[in-house]
Length: 95
Image (cartoon, rainbow, N blue to C red; front, side, top):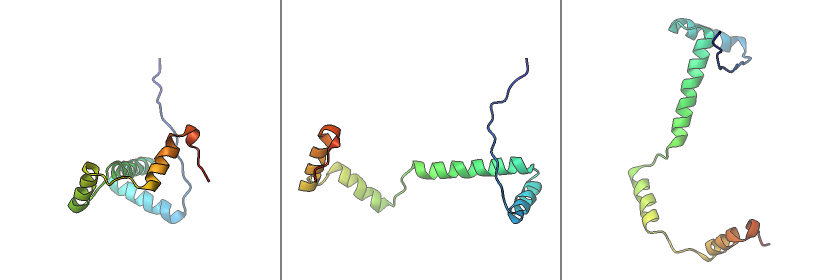
């Protein structure tokens, strides 16, 4: 029984300058154009996901953030009203 690959196809149309640049870079790395594009796109996707997964703060910002979590301000009338509306059936909004 032949093994089946579980893969998806990705394609793109690019102008000649982009194509030549990608082809040259692929050749310089010893990869096929397809291998180069897939590897490069995957690496960039991982960078984007990693960047969005964490909140980066300065030490000062982190201190203020955690201090506020530990000692939150008292709720304002607007916040109390918003919480009351949120708890209402279907999150009804009063005009």
